[in-house]
Image (cartoon, rainbow, N blue to C red):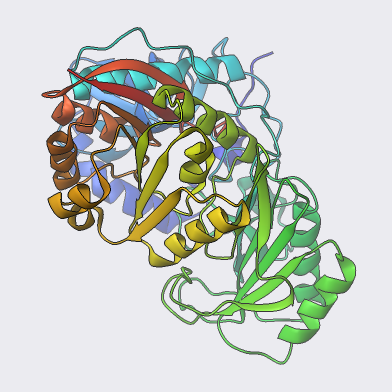
Length: 495
């Protein structure tokens, strides 16, 4: 049976007059001449970038959220640009055969897992198509047949890290508003879509294994019972700000409580957590009164336990601190790294450059199959983690350097360390800086393995590398089920 979206899952809240006025004020001038019939009984045709669907009607390009290919809907325009419109469904006339019943009670209200209404095989099909479309339309380079997407080992409870936000004024669904009952507005949960200041009260999240839900609910209930001030996201006032939970595949468990300021209630709350959840191996807090929740420049105080946890992969142990980056799908990361190593074709004699090495996870993972690995990373603390991870695993053929990639990776650096046989590059979503691409073209390494979390920027970089390299293998990897995000691994070989 096709899944019928609940009324509360409409992206616009009809009970919020100001929201409606602002929305229509933005689009009234641009859409006033669109015949109403063009927005009625519209059949959704294609899934496109960022999980949106596409409709074309009389030279109108309309991007639609909250639907699936095959749905027939009435639309309401919420944004108008020069070349396209953005719309949301207001009425469903027919439901797509691709729909399945979402398993999470918060689906449609929460900003995550937006593809739960699609079967997993359908999700994989769209992700595969997304990679192909980006490489062909943006990259415009010759491609081999793209290998089938590698699925995630697990589809629920696959994340090892979640961040929850406190709010004194939680988001209400339409059903809650219409019920007219008094509802507790102090909440601890996730942001609603496109709202920095509205948080939904999460009852159960299917993304992270227990005791993640138990810890979140215990903290929220303790704060309510003791009348602790919750975060005001608009004025940035309150005491409780943010809760981070990291669960490792070793059984280690880290909790980080972020507060605006020191409060007499902080130590009793931490003691409560330690007593109720003795399995917490690293209990930390941060005092942060900045305008954002990032704390890489702040002190993280370890209140109980060790100031880190460990993840394991193929007999290797990786130390993960409060500020460390580690792939959030541990088992999926193992698949990704094995594929990266396979594409690199290592025999034990190669000099490998690992660009954007982070905490050295890929560098240390491939080191046993290489002669030497040189990692480069912008964040200095991550480089310290990379060295530490080599030391923990008794790996002696790695070295790491911190600095801006385009500045570090110069002719002197290459002359000192040698021309690499293989370059592994795993840049952030923005892709590689043009100067880094230029350095790769100068180096002429026989093989480049390009790992990307954004096939669009990867495609742009492949086009620039095309003058010296040909793409010989492509394989997408699903690390984030029920979302539109996809990793992609490309092997380039020198022409």
